[in-house]
Image (cartoon, one colour):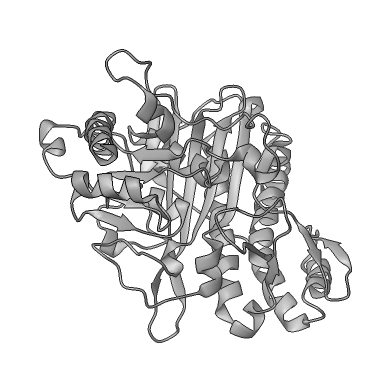
Length: 407
């Protein structure tokens, strides 16, 4: 099963290459934007966009998993058919022609198909097709040394090909971080691939690829970073960076999970990352719990990554505008680290003394009565955390301060 995770890491890096290639030329990038149709839009935004990069990444992930499964082993047949994502692969040209974007067997055929989407721009199509058909390798000693037997028929995959599409389109490269956290900009863009159990909805494996971490001042080319985690039964394994300032996309170190909880861990003031659109009541309560250590940031995947990286203790969001493809990958990594992701509304309504245990978000059931993308919304909001004990302490403070806010 580590072979599947290894392949997901490879394909996430290919996806990152596509995202970077599409941003490299401004003239090309202007061709890639198409407004989403009703039913596909995230209601949080007045205008939501999909880009050719989004769709290409999603289709590359699907096809690579299908092809690799067939070429390497018969152990995981049909896995590509159980990959679900945010994007529709239908584009409409300026002439009104509808084109279904599917990757072709050869680079030449992909060029021809992309040329239709890009209104005959052959040079742009050739550049993209080259990246799409380029092989990417990924090696990690920890994955090579661990063999985990997870039944293939229970696996489903959620993909967010480019999370924080608005920041990707805007393309700001000069945003300054606040204590390591970027409020906006290309650094907030992530590629999310989460594997879950289709019977229980529990997230099992996750990959977060951050394509835009550091930019070379001379070439203006970007380097990225990849994070991963696997949690299945007693096995919990994940990638960790000992120094955020020394991140490198080709240097992903990994280690077995260790229990680092201690009383000292909970003695400091809490820190949290939030959405720029968070409710005022939540922000007011958080300011009492965390003081000045509340950081607004773009991108659901990026905010979860801030928790994974240890930049903050908590990612909290009270709205229902994140989705299963936003949370599955980081949730799997956090589970591997001893943390998790839970429903905020359920947390606030639960009596910690007599109420049931906190339930983790699950990924296999649609929301009853919902349509379009809302079928897969995290309806009660969410809290992402690395330590269960810390979460309980945080919730008690938050609930008290929310009560004070309402009185």
